[in-house]
Length: 386
Ligand SMILES: Cc1cc2nc3c(=O)[nH]c(=O)nc-3n(C[C@H](O)[C@H](O)[C@H](O)COP(=O)(O)OP(=O)(O)OC[C@H]3O[C@@H](n4cnc5c(N)ncnc54)[C@H](O)[C@@H]3O)c2cc1C
Image (tube, rainbow, N blue to C red; front, side, top):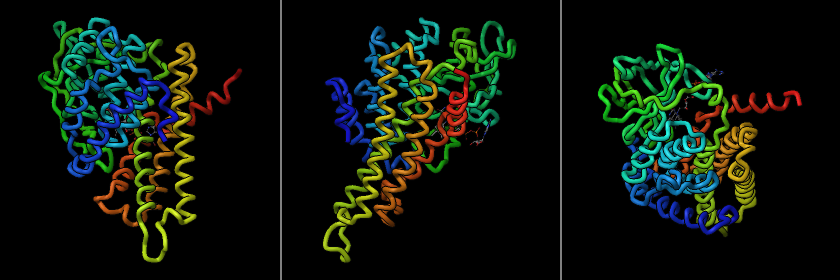
């Protein structure tokens, strides 16, 4: 199914590199899921081959891959292990977004890129909180930042901090007491008063270790404030990097599809003179899976290609970006369901990868933006005055 989306030698090479990694990840996926442990081994391999700098700009020594290429990588890695892919996606996507939008002071971004390229450090955003819920809904953080003697003092609790045990830097959103503005603060894991609470005991995406981050009077210097959020310029910016989410869940769905086909080709009960691959209803379900995947993947890659080719049209693509996520995550849920119907009761056993895929794709529905936000965004555009 992949050859159609691999257009250039560079895309083929990236895909090949990602496939090699995914094959290793697949062998360990069951273990990390069952134990709900962060897949440090997978990240050691990603670091070894320099994957953490894929989205770092060339001027800072990275590969500066395009959005389209980023999605190819994410989708491929997710076929091996969804939790590893989603985790890497946050790191790579944030770097891509900061570079594209010149969000941070240049010296800070240059330093971080240097650390990524030379030390393969990891970063991620800690934005969600119990009271605000999903940051996509615009809730104001209850985490606070206060200036004391020229330093920032930050306190609060963040939920759903993916890669928590593996991060070198946390990008923490906080309300600045003095002004009421919301800022993003870049905080190293070594900061005093920062700790991880292992709250991540979930149904799916267990290896992401999206634990709580607790900050108690964490002191950082002035330069830690890297961005003011909700500024008129920053508000409502189209964010192509978030397509790493649909790419990840489509990767899991592809793995489910392959599993169902392999099973159908090899399973021959003694009630049939042939494997179930020749049963019309099984063939119908597999065709249904493939048609759904074709629609979702062509939509995603086409939007990414538009994004890469026409930077001046990006701002007008917000609804398309949200719709890609809507279509992809719902397709993934449906595809895994169909794959399990093909495989039958075998898919329920804990050793079977399909039950993991079933649980993992559920998480996609709760990554941003939620379906209701997408629906209202698209409806608003439909009814707006020309
Ligand atoms: C696997 C995974 C990884 C994640 N990684 C990260 C991460 O690295 N960093 C990070 O910051 N976050 C992360 N998140 C958190 C994510 O972005 C959301 O904050 C989280 O999933 C909660 O989303 P929610 O839609 O359930 O929000 P909630 O706000 O808790 O909403 C719960 C329900 O209430 C309803 N609701 C809530 N508010 C409104 C409203 N204003 N209007 C209408 N209905 C409403 C909706 O029906 C929603 O389904 C991750 C989440 C998952 C599942």
